[in-house]
Length: 366
Ligand code: M6R
Image (cartoon, rainbow, N blue to C red; front, side, top):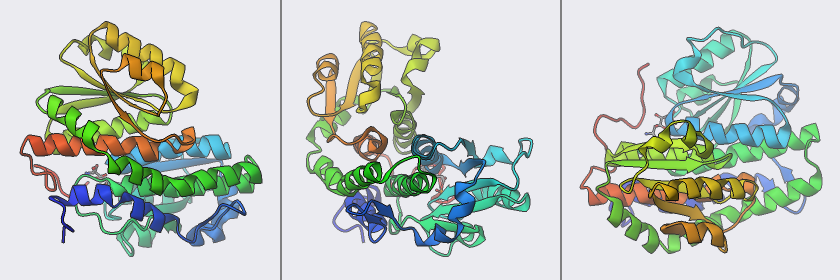
């Protein structure tokens, strides 16, 4: 059932090229520059006219929502707020007609997410789902939605659901951008063409895991980890830290790289592994200064970067290289080494990778 892998998590990490191909199949056309999403074709007018989009989710799905915020704002110029589903209900309820809520859930059964969905719906918002499990409660209760088609995810640590959620959000943002004319056909063709190459690029990352294994072996007994990223890489930093926390029980924090100087930089010494995600061109110079700050305090730098990024490579003690892509699509690649890092560290520490302590695959209590 684990298909020859030691754990479901590893199997699911390696399934990502296929999961994303399944997710994209029949939905994108790179020659024409079009995106077809059967589940939301009928509500596109409402989506186009949305005053704002509120994304509600928990855990890893909340992280993909944060990537979604960058995607929708950049490609479709619509304001987006990302809420922890569990907090949404306790805020002043300013949501209503003209607003669109997107709920993201792998299981489709998360109680907090379901509660946010019901609250938004009762106030007249249009609620869309980005869900994996077909026919789940969230899928049934949303007004419309897009399945991620990642296949069953058994490991408690979410991996392929994250990349498939981000893939769906990317397709939705391109589609909305085309409707709103905030991107033109030429840009759409480029984005879709690049998106179509993502499964093969993930395959490439998965073909050589030696560097990540070596880094995992060196840092398996570190008590703390920091993950830093900017822009599209910031949610990836949060996701990398969550993966490490939940399966290896190492304390880890993800931060926007520039926030470091407002506090967390005090934590850095020669004992602290700092994972920096430096694989987006538009933030490269700024990331280099952040890496220099860490280096000056003797932090152990592990860089996730692109081929030929010599400045980053020179500054980092360790590196893991991911293929180049457009900045907007980079989370789909940069998260892969972080999933592997947490997996190999957890295995080294003898942890129960697929069923970490205190956690359940779907959290059906509020
Ligand atoms: O099924 P959902 O996507 O609604 O689940 C949300 C979170 O409980 C989930 O992502 C959790 O954070 C994972 N264990 C993360 O790996």
